[in-house]
Image 1 (cartoon, helix red, strand yellow):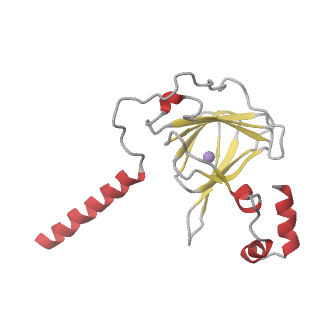
Image 2 (image 1 turned 90 degrees about the horizontal axis):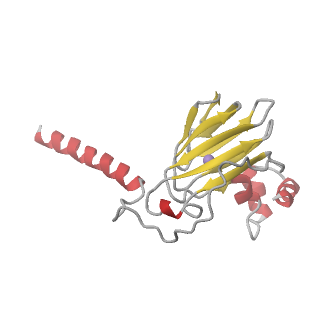
Image 3 (image 1 turned 45 degrees about the vertical axis):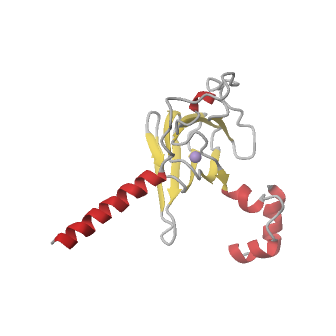
Length: 197
Ligand code: MN
């Protein structure tokens, strides 16, 4: 009985630790503003979506608001042209909660190996959707007008890894032979993709 309670306590402790260690460290002071002359957010301005993917992310992290330093939170505005996408990407240091300001979005993320399960949903103005830390996720504007959303992220500096850019647009290139084998396509298909990023 005692030993099973001990195991339970150990399990609880491990669970609490895993939660604690997964977040940013607690700040040691109320705030820590390194530079009080930040460049401002520009959040009131719709981002220019005239690009290959038809979307624009306007990040508002510690680089734009120095007052976020040590506080473990930031924002981004995402604008989408009709049928524009925010391509598959991941934030290595933050969970994201997305609120739709305008339009209709198809949103989704993929769970880790071995399931790689796609969890997706159509969200409307005022809806929210959560992308868990580290998981690959995306959005697509499935309406006929522009769409906009605000993403809140659980880090002052969430980081972004865009899958296509990281894999096919690294500097220098990952060897096409490696990518051909990884993606099970011939080398020309890889070279074609690498030429786009
Ligand atoms: Mn994101």
